[in-house]
Image (cartoon, rainbow, N blue to C red):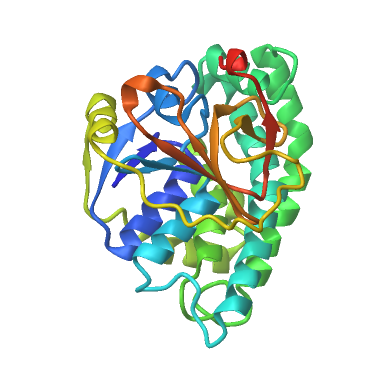
Length: 313
């Protein structure tokens, strides 16, 4: 089990903590925080977001799907505690969607803008290109950061409110996936800023953050991108159980060349569609030197389009 990640990636921290919580032994491949990422994108067919989880010749993209896979493989301790798993999971997904879309994005723009000098200009240019924005100057990045502060501070107080019922964690006295997703936000502030003074008026949030930080990353050890690619070459992907009755709304058939990408980002995987249902897409990597590698995506948050073989970048 190999996790592609980098030090200050908040989404990577979510999965590193999840691996620690599950007690899983894993290997770490450090990827650059901005492009190019040649070994990484070779494995993913062009996809460039971190983290990515590799299990043999299966590659899992997006923390939503990675968490689902880890919960399936290692159900204890669960990340969906409570008598009704479906209800807990729905509550978690609702909170996660808010935290990772409405809160984390303006928070990242605020913190990386306010501390723009901590990052090379190439980092800011890379992020602008990823989101289809005009290449910025460092001064413009710093100025625009100020507009995000009110959006960030108001939502941080919502976390304090979620913890005001006397329970140890967001949903109950047991940790859930919602905690690990929301935790990214104060963790990222501390990682980049160096302290948590922004949260001094939120004592419950600070106590909760300290509680989660004790989980740790579990048993991890470093490995190289080359070793990870070698593992993919000598492995075979897991069996697929297809649903012949499932018809894609995009009118794409299995075996067709496709492009899968997150909505609003220039981070695409190209390959042949091997599987699709209402929750997952699986694409076969076109790189012939890797053997047969399957790249997995969640349906939510991703679009799929038919492409021609010549479109592969």
